[in-house]
Image (cartoon, rainbow, N blue to C red; front, side, top):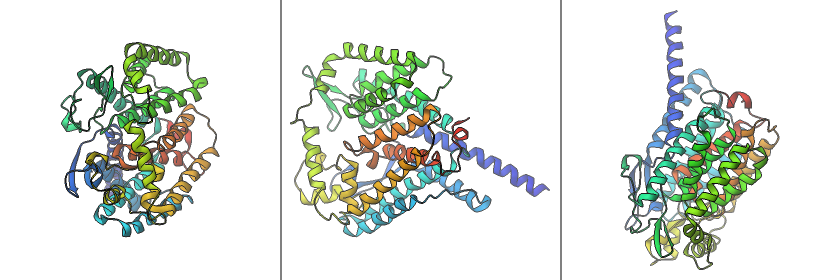
Length: 429
């Protein structure tokens, strides 16, 4: 009898440990703590480098504990018919490495793709068993609020806060490659939080805001928290993501309570009054603006060369540098469109497999009943992510963006009608 009791206690302890690691992982998503493993080429380029993130270690710990449960307890590994599209995409990405200018970098990016695909399967298979949606979203919201406070402090200081251990970048409006804009002749630095770019900070706060809308947390000072989140969100001056938030807000307007609507309008009006020169500067979009011209240039480049198998997963920047030598180092970046980036790196077959996977996820999710508010919230967030993918690459190339994308896809798959996860159970505490 002693052995079964010990085994039972061990399983309980491992279950609690795995749950704790998962929630720590959710809170840690915005932190950029990492070490450089290898950088290829002359000089440092973010896109020609390999890193190990603290969040990678947490993901590996979760996967290890999950695989242990599968082997010992025969726990579930949910694999749906449409997951063959994801498997096909991984295989196509592996084959594309034969065309890669830097095959070592291609193998590293293939491993990252496998890592996040396994995170998708982990999320899909363990919602309602190891973690629930309400607690996960509450923890992400707490992390997003922390980032919002950091963003406000960074903006008014116009410098970083020295939080290197959390991955905060050295920030100053006069430093090269720091995101700035001009308003009334003054250089304004956009806040980063502990993330690699203001747009990624905007993404984290954007997700936090949608969670706050619909999860009905019993929070004191909920509208004050929302007001701070929204104020910090606007301070990122991330035009496309703010537009996506506005579109989502209008779509969900009828489902929001009056206090939320009132807080939204109040913050929008006050922010516009206090920061009108900055708002006007960001609203004034010129076709000659560098952000616009570069996006068009990258998009055109991505449509050529090896359309069948692509230039190799993770190798667009390498290939781009080969065909366009002599440009300024900061111009060697991925295509600011995840669909064109996938096409350029893995070819038409890779893009088709990935799109079929996403379309299948959507079709299966729509077969269910949207019985609770967060069903709308998660789905609209996902659709807005797909929209954002037309204008930037961070959901496909940046650690935090990838995690958020694959977690969201995993949640949609877990709450689809084919899944063995009960929606109400998955959302409960």
